[in-house]
Image (cartoon, rainbow, N blue to C red):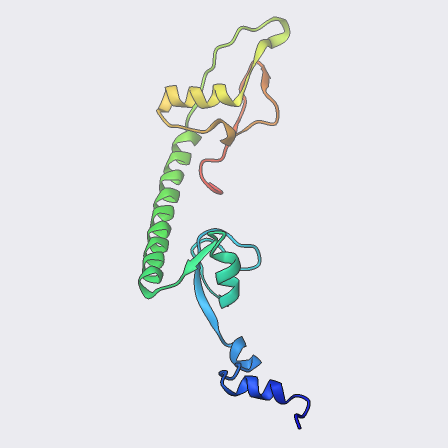
Length: 165
């Protein structure tokens, strides 16, 4: 006579035992993020993620790649190089800001009565004048004008050279 559940026991006899939940939870892999991933990390970070998350989500979407020893060393080298480059860029930006603080620009425009300009002086005009005077490239979006200059006279203009410089 066959007891209920006997067929299940016979089927499992030859199959390998399934891993326990605790064993499955410990199978995390390392991944190097190729892009910023919300709630996980920024580009270039080495993170621990579940194998399935890496295999089914991060990998196919090209958000991360498997972390090998050589690849981790390469990412760390690139991060160090990036930090040195940023430090050098900040130093150059401070020199540029010091030079621009001493710069006085004269922009010629036609004016009407009551010292009003016919047009206006925009951030593009200011960045072009800086290029002509000092041969320094300043992006027009870095020139901070509340509104275009429409009157004659002296005006102070704020520039964002790099980051918070």
